[in-house]
Length: 401
Image (cartoon, rainbow, N blue to C red):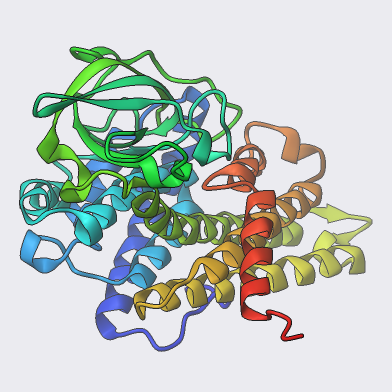
């Protein structure tokens, strides 16, 4: 283990899980990640390895065949996986948001039906809030679910589905107006539907089309897609929790887990960038000595390492707060904001340390340089995080005049 980003107070089981994951990352992910990423190829063998390790069931309760581990354990595993290749952490992140939402909000029948198969990776999850026209404004969702007998007909267009093609279960946020009088706040008329589908692209079931992968600057390998719903029929027992109008709260609860995950990804990518930078600085010679002996480079390494440590500490704090059952939106927002910003800065410093070679596709830092920006916008932009943080601070420090 590296000197940086250590986590104190872990159990023997947690340390064993992390050691196993780190070993898997070093042997199975890092050696092939850049090649697969440049080809934008789905990491099938890596995913099979994650299934064998039981990582798809990491946070799913033991009664449903999972390992029953904490959000902290999961976040630390994500940190290790993102250190190898951030796209792989994306494959399990959306899966876990859906599993978490089912565990917290699903009916007993829904939990018993989905969670055991999610624990093995047989059922793979994705979740969908965003739409082409709304960005961060979740309350402006226009995809509708209309009651038709004992079913709902879903119609609309969704955007930015991670695992949109490879998943077999998508948690979809829609507007459902029945039972909500005119003037009801928009977030009170939203419902989460559990949509089962076949993996792949095209019309994957009647009324549901996954057009194809969106071409991206980075975050390759993992499939990011749109989703078009055209009168898709969903039985009423696939409303998450069995009650309409609760979708916004359910999704926001899941996003808090997702924000800790994105913070963990930022920590992992920053760690890898530091590793690459500090290694290269000791191998590359200029003016008769390794560049690591130049004070300018030592200053960069000092700043990079401090940012890695700070981001890790905030991420761990946010995960532990959620695990304790407390509200953690402030801590998750702060951790996500800081870790993603610091990740971008650490990656750029490592890129600068590499000099001209950082611009070459032969060097791993080139891939990290294209991946880091996704963390600035995923699970809510930096600006959205600051809005959440600011509002929560004003709640906590309300002026008593």
